[in-house]
Image (cartoon, rainbow, N blue to C red; front, side, top):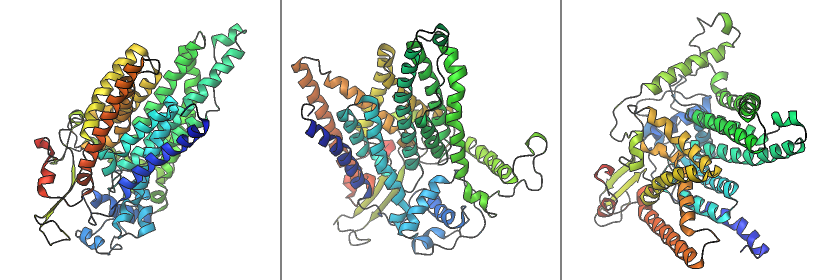
Length: 507
């Protein structure tokens, strides 16, 4: 392949195209099934439509789900509804509903499926940026394309699949910034090597468009769910540490202070303000309206003193955010499918999004023994558990080899998983792991590459390693095929559904 430029160019196009096409087929096939509102779609579907029409989510009658599915999509009131997530995810869901009609179950889920498919392509591009290996990128993207929680969260109108897309986009832009900024830093430092004062302090890099893009993407992630803030903080910290180490390698004597006190503030100004602008812009509909929840909460008692200059609309938005924060930190409502973050690596309690049984001849069931439909947010269990082991391997390898790519992947995992460990009593769910799955699969792909062996390894070692990797990928693919009906709500015999309950807590 490498020896033939024409074949190499063809593979450069076909690899991302085919893996993205596979992801699209798995996510769009039968997207409108089930045609009912499932799990927390009861909040996001209706709120997204009223958000699209009014500019803010509105309240609905108590029996709104059945009436909405039946086509009564205009029964929302003009009174703002209390929602605890920013608007961007609902705006995107609403766009799909506007395209296909609000009563179309395909329309509810269209934007989520588009961004879920696009996430696979972005993961490919990110993996290629890190390793410059198209094979590595193809394997990583393929594992995400066939993963269960990634498929489920691309077929249900919730926010987490949308969040995953923007998080991956932010990390891809960060990788592009690292490559460009480090090359410029090395070139500028080398050009000034003969000037001792110049070697004492390095250049401050302001022309970093990819860092600005990363800030915008992280701001969009935060505008979907506040957990995007952790991603923004992680990217900022990663940029400072990377700059510091690059300045040390370049021979800059004051490299810690240079990175933290000179380049650090510049990077902050490139990263954070654009994120704030994107985030506040997502609230434009609420700010421009009069009916949004808490829209005039502090009109009677606006801020005085140092904050008196802040526009009243933004003061009301701040008051709303204080209420949202109090809700999130105090959310301890019992739920049958709640799963604290410490359970996630073990897959103790996946979330059942939909479960239905129909007798033969009813509801379109053609199976003599009846039909069972299920949607479970379980990832591919083989890939997941292997990925957890690979994360441990990657952490150990980073200590030994100090490979920056390992640090990059571990940073993504820390930003998407670590914060949830701080809330052991909060009501959270296993499907939140969809955001960390790409980084888990990154670690797994690095481990598979180690098993395959380096190009310089003896041929017998190389062949045996490659065969192990191929067998593993075949097993993972077969497991995904076995689980796909349970990820997509296809009608199957009850006994077939029972075969998927590998642990009693999965029921």
